Length: 367
Ligand SMILES: *Cc1c(COP(=O)(O)O)cnc(C)c1O
Image (cartoon, rainbow, N blue to C red; front, side, top):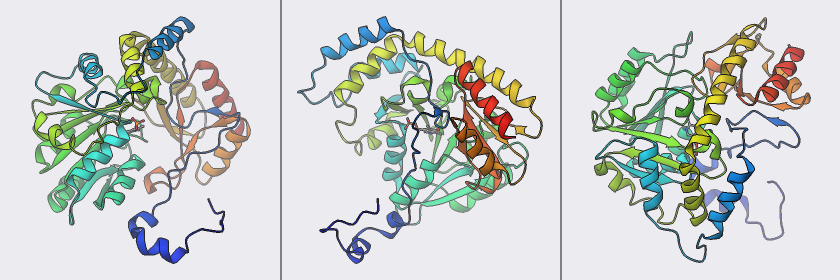
């Protein structure tokens, strides 16, 4: 926004009071979509069958929006615990998206001289939240050949920086791979602080650390319903031992999960089979898209255990190929420039066979 109004504060006033770390940030950029096929944000393209939508609207009719929501979302938590297989003795905490939970964790540990650590490339929110909460942000490049963890570098960085939190996206966004399970276990074991295994793409991964919560007293597991089909709802879940979550819960604003979200998420979880069936379709679609992409000349396709695929185009051509695909009506995400390890890389969300086909056609034409 650059429109100056008559009563706008002078820049000097803004500079005086807004912290430098905040001024240095650029706002999270969400592109205009217009009529484009949207394959940039890992959304689930499938909607619900009409009878299910009608049933959901009936549920909302009874929601008491004149009242504050249940601050502990008790009914919803019971459903979530069962659906996500949260181990006995572990607690869960709900966030307005898992982004909010990342923010709450950072706020709880932030103090001068403390760091968060994550492999690079990383989910951009880790860095932004670290900056806002005043945590030092340490990133350790993944191995360039296959985006696996660089274990010697990770060990050294953990020893040197003693991070308050290590964030591990599992599968990794934006690379799409799952880190080696034993290596992640080692990182949890050698970390002096918390390790948050961020399982945003769990529905597509077939591997989880949820069942290991009891094994490690510094492990937290983060989940979200966003990538499974409820991105618009904003529903994140953090699982871990009550000792940690009782503290984190003090920071959570009491009514962060609205009446409508609690009712809708509860309804969705009672029909979780629908979401699971959609995730299964997307996993099939992913395999087909991977096969089709691998058949194209001139690009390198990375394996994916998520609902997106990272691929590398010929050197220097990523911006032009991205724009050409967009001009043909398909919006994907350019990762070029986000990290040295992502030079010439583009990322596409797996969608319906029709939308995937439109993307493939556009990519082929662009190449
Ligand atoms: C998308 C994503 C999230 C955030 O999900 P919300 O629940 O929608 O806030 C968190 N972590 C990773 C790695 C993601 O890709």
